[in-house]
Structure formats: C-alpha cells, structure tokens
Length: 495
Image 1 (tube, rainbow, N blue to C red):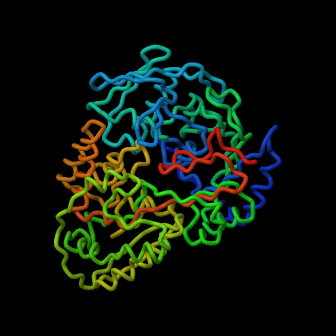
Image 2 (cartoon, rainbow, N blue to C red):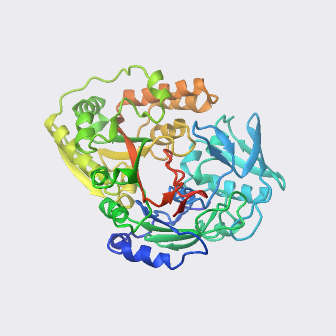
Image 3 (cartoon, rainbow, N blue to C red):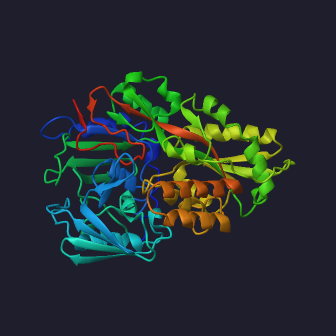
C-alpha cells in the first residue's frame, strides 16, 4: 500500500507574507514567449507534498495540471475527460480511454497507466475519501479500454472518478515512497517545480491534447494570511487571489472581487463518543445556544447564508426536499467544561470560535478554545481529542454528490468522522443514499440521510459560505468554481 506524502513542516509558510513581493517578482523573470504568467496567491500550503491521494489533489486540479477520467458539468453530471465514453454492466463499468494523450514526461496515456493510478489510489493507506466504503478493482481490457469493478453495484462510479484524488498520473509519479506529481500530469500546464510549502511553478504544456493554454505559465505562492493575500491583489503583486477574507473584501475594489455561493458549510462537530457531548441532551443544549444569524452578520458581514441543514443554497434542490427533523430535548448545561478546536487557515474561524464561546458560556457551559494552523490540529480532531470542532467543510467536493461527504463525515467507518459518530440509523440512511441511482430518488435519499445525521446533533450546521475570489483588472478567463476544482484553466490569461 502506498502512503500519502508525510505532512511537511510549515516553517516556510510564516515567511510567505513577508516575502510575497519577492516571490512574485522573481517568478516574472521566468516568463515565456508570449503574454504574462499568471501570479496566483493561494490560501493553504500543501499538507502532503502535493500528493494526489490527499486534499492537495485539488490544488493540482485548480492549476490544470492533473486530470481525471471524467469531469462534472454545472449540474454535477459526468462528462468525458481522459475517458471519452463509458457503459455499466452490473458491478463493472467499461471506460474508453482518450487517444493521443501524453503525460508531461512524454509517455503515452494508456489503459495500463490508468489502471496503475487507480490501483495506487484504491490500495493506499488511508484511501482517498472518495473511496470510503468502496472496494474498487481496475483492469486493462486492451490498450485503450479499462474496466472498473466494485464490490457492490455503484451507480455513482463515474462521478467518483471525477474526484481530483483519482487523477491519472504517469508511472514515474509512483516510483518512490510517496506520489510525486511533478512532470507527471496530462493537463495544459506542467508542474515543474515545488518550493516546499511556499511556492510552485507550472509551465504551459505545448503537447496538450486539448486547447493550448493561453498563458505561458503559473507562479503560485502560498499565503495563509488573508490580509496578506488581499494586500497582494491591491498592490498588483498577484493576479488571482483565492479565498479573500470577508474582513478584507470591503477594502478592495468591488470590480475585482466575485462572490459565489459555495457548497461549503461552517459546522460545529460535537464529539458523540467521549466527554460532555456524549450526552445527546447536552448536544441539544449546545445546538439551542447557537445564534447563527449573529455569526453571519457579525463575523461574515452578511456575506454568508444561515444554515437550515448541512446542504446549502449551492444545492437548490435540498431546500425543496427538506422536512422537519425530530431531535432530542435539551437539558440545561450546569458548568460543564468543553474544549472547542478550530484552525487559523480560514480567517473567519477564530472569530466564529470566539463568538461561539460567548454563546455557549451564556447557556451555562465553560468553554476553552484551541486554535492552531490546520496542519497542526487535523490529526487531533480526527482522533476525537476535542469536545467540539469548528470546520468549514465542502459538501460536494469530491464526486459532485453530497452522499460521499455525508458518508465520510458521519458513517461509523467514515474517514473524516470528527464527531466519532456510530449510529445504526445514520449508517442505514447513508447506505441507502449511496445505493440509489442518480436522479430525483437519490436526492431524496440524500436529504433523508441528512435528517438522520441532524437528529443526532452530532453536527450543528451554522452557515453556508460564499467564496470571495480576487481577480486583477487584467485577468481574463479565471474560473469561479463553486466546487473549488478549477481556477486557472487553458482559457485563463493576463493582459
């Protein structure tokens, strides 16, 4: 089994803001034959050495360097990418591989290469979360055809294969103990250099199978500090800035920012396995103490939507299907001490934590806060070290279907089960949602699963975020993607 890359030290990250001007200035000397390189300021540095088997895969996708067999359209339906067509027969799906595609190292995309990448993902420890509960076997039928078989019939398999964590890379990416994507993708930009947790460089790949990229390259700087990211846009040091903090949006020219409702929910996860919130009635007390509207207005300055459930307005069908949830009655808190964890990488979360601290203390709890960088707190959160944890969580990040997120976060064997939830009724509802065919029936099953989770008070959804992206005046064709899969595409360039 292959392990994702080890978490890298973040010592370089602290200096990113101070060195921002120098980083971008030095990259300009690498400009290509035409146009300008795109200077990109990103929020979170790589956590796993840009391994596609981790969340770092979404960086590779947003840079248009790594590609998957399938992509999703605006409605979440599967469309051709490295595979041109597919058919299902029971537990087996057959994919026709696109002809004439080369990896950035010059080798050909073949069925064997596809099988190699999918097998590496399926046998990794831990597996990519899109494969939670899925046993997958890939085989090459011939040089241009791959069969993918699952232990159980899976109506969502093409959507699963659209996850950036199942990107197809050249064989050379898998020769070490970790997966190295440098020079191993198939996209319009080739990843040429990674500067640890501070920077990355990509050059246009002129032998790309699709439309040739309009920009000669991309220069990435990782800037965890939101104020520094916004300053880079104001000063002209960055062309595209992701995740502009709400507090900085008012300081920017409105013509330079785009606000998009995201399938991302700010949720308070409550530990159901140990500590104060093992008691369902105290979880209910915490839920009743939370005033989400004041958080939206006070912390997000109105640039968010109060949550009615785990799934928000980016999935408009959810509100129409949702019904009232029967919950446990609350009992009064009586000075119980709880520790809430969250992270600094998203600028609003520490403020949310401070507001929640006040609200829960008013309800009778004693509240301690533990706020760190995400890379330094994730393992403790997953191990159940906190009574509660505040997380900004994408709800359709992987497959475009929220069933995968619900399973990952709330199934007994989910890989991201911060609430430590083990509930038979929830597991049953999640299983039903996962087995239902794509369409209206599946959407209803997903909402039923959401209701089963909410009934436990293992998670208290507070608000649905809107992403604020900054694009300099000369930027053309930058993507504004609610799923956070695209950012710089072949059509993006700087005038």
